[in-house]
Length: 160
Ligand code: ADP
Image 1 (cartoon, rainbow, N blue to C red):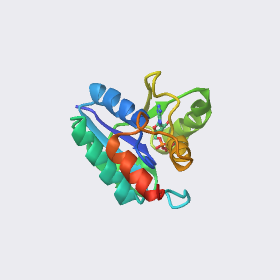
Image 2: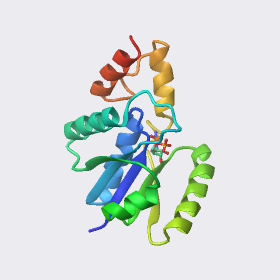
Image 3: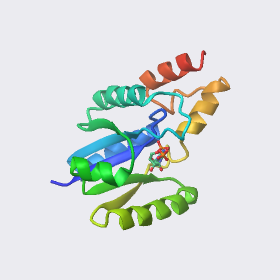
């Protein structure tokens, strides 16, 4: 059984992330979704809140995954939890350059961990947490973009 980790900011988790979680889960029986505690990024939700929202959402979609958070280097975290694979999602070409760099750097740091890239469904491929936050803050409807529980937390946090 191969253990895979799907890392990201998840600030907050969107239907695009969920699409990748479900696809990854079809390949890897043992999947950990890991929230990166990156202090250099300004996030709307704390790592604990992001973990809590992902846990709530995976419960409702019946996906058996572990949800965790980590500090420091992703490859070190992956090694610590015994994950041999890192899953990332790919949207348009714009993601490719950064992900390509990341994958080569990770390989240099930890050659025995493989990066696996999954493409999300066409209906959610344009989604990003940033875009969802922007639309929500401007009063747009985000019902189709994030799970209900996330929508409520987001609108509350934005004072809507
Ligand atoms: P990061 O800050 O590490 O980019 P994100 O939370 O933005 O974290 O995304 C985590 C991972 O999920 C990244 O690999 C990202 O490309 C992928 N991802 C996010 N949204 C989508 C989407 N709509 N379709 C496919 N992959 C996505």
